[in-house]
Image (tube, rainbow, N blue to C red; front, side, top):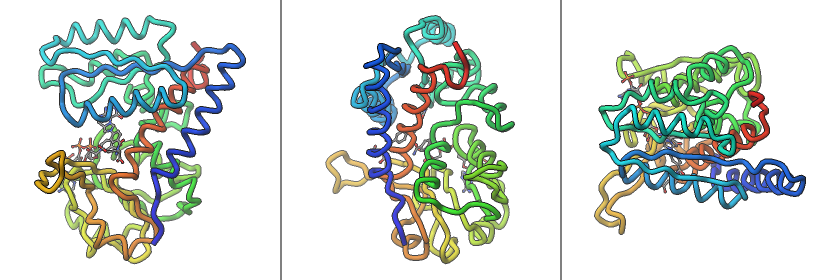
Length: 294
Ligand SMILES: NC(=O)C1=CN([C@@H]2O[C@H](COP(=O)(O)OP(=O)(O)OC[C@H]3O[C@@H](n4cnc5c(N)ncnc54)[C@H](OP(=O)(O)O)[C@@H]3O)[C@@H](O)[C@H]2O)C=CC1
Ligand SMILES: Nc1nc(=O)c2c([nH]1)NC[C@@H]1CN(c3ccc(C(=O)N[C@@H](CCC(=O)O)C(=O)O)cc3)C=[N+]21
């Protein structure tokens, strides 16, 4: 079993990004600037957004956090999004999910300028990604692809099973893995809560991507010997022995699954760190006008 080490990879990628930002700086170019909008004060969201901002600063990029009250109206949030769209200094914009129930996330995502949509959530980016055209790719699936590439994992002809069909993780993951490029060329099965015989389908996976948000759902008996196991799940479960009062759990029961897997991601220290790297890579592309010229 080999660990897919998100800590190691993300440190390497951050060095690469830092070198590129330094070069831009020397040449008097535009320093990439990522903006995050955080509505309310959900504990997990606070942590992730803070980490995104901190990572940007560490690689020499600019970052701005816009905090809004949970009672903010959809119209006010849309105005903020348009303000960032219109600010030429701001290259990338993420609106942290989940949003309060009174705000329609689709309306927000459709209002973000696709050229600044470093999350890859705008329908234009999802459509372009599906067609294999230049696009911002959803950060988590892009981070998973980067891991597969950097560990030189073979994907052509393999059966890839994705558990979970969310628009931000499972669905784009399945589209990317079936494309006619590396990493891809898999035969993909996309599963969800209505899937029958899920255990059997998981057992037939050469590459298993768990993104359902149910702590330790994937057990040892659901995994084939030698499978590549990617755990996207990240849940806070109460744990009195921890100072924070919670432990972080993935969707995979690591102790049971790891001995059977050829490669496996840990949680924490796996996919989450790669997600942040993807956001910074996308922001760099945005500042350079690589995907869309601005
Ligand atoms: N590491 C990272 O960077 C990131 C981690 N995450 C984590 O990944 C997990 C998934 O997040 P997200 O995609 O947003 O989740 P969602 O809750 O949006 O989607 C969950 C998906 O899993 C499916 N599902 C739920 N229960 C089952 C089940 N018992 N069997 C099969 N499928 C099931 C749902 O099916 P249905 O469609 O039928 O409801 C749905 O498609 C979470 O733990 C989240 O915290 C998320 C984003 C980034
Ligand atoms: N618009 C938007 N874009 C997102 O990219 C987005 C989002 N909304 N909503 C929530 C999910 C979740 N997400 C993570 C980011 C970093 C870690 C991460 O850094 N994880 C570390 C540390 C975990 C910890 O210590 O809490 C790890 O897994 O090792 C995890 C999860 C981005 N998301």
